[in-house]
Image (cartoon, rainbow, N blue to C red; front, side, top):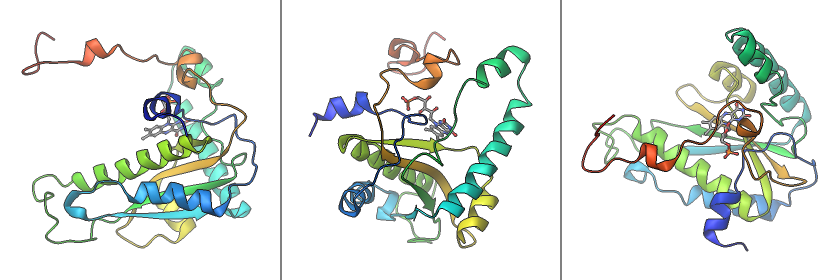
Length: 208
Ligand SMILES: Cc1cc2nc3c(=O)[nH]c(=O)nc-3n(C[C@H](O)[C@H](O)[C@H](O)COP(=O)(O)O)c2cc1C
């Protein structure tokens, strides 16, 4: 197992490097167990995990992603559109499987301890589960790619997600040839990582 900080810095959003090779069930369950160990507001554990191996379902989703990609591309100026055209935004077809992570605001409600003043705290909790999953998969030497080029209603219909429960992430998962050292968006010239010093404030939001 790699060291904790190695996992943090080696984690990558993977789109183009999936091999499609098998993910043993016990490895998948270890990764989902790590996700389920995340903190959650009021211990609400508002997440569910839908494992999608079915080819037809993934194909339907991949088509939807391509349509949403076109919707976004149409909003860009010529220069950005040319850069965007070189960027792959999902590995739905190439990855071994997908995990869709959902948020159920009704879980543990109405008295969710700590959510009375910040409704979003439930969503924050789901994102922590997703990050645990992402890091655990990295520690298992697998790749994960988060896909958000979708409409929630489409995913809910496709997977029969109950009313009131929201899909938060469609994650592609599986073995990869390698993980790049630099994020795809940086390598393709879309956007780079901002220096930490630019984002660090002390004793209040100062001097900006
Ligand atoms: C909420 C969220 C949604 C994202 N949606 C997509 C997506 O639809 N397609 C994609 O290729 N990457 C997506 N990403 C990955 C980001 O582009 C990626 O995290 C970022 O460029 C930094 O790269 P790294 O994760 O490899 O460090 C998403 C990431 C997050 C956190």
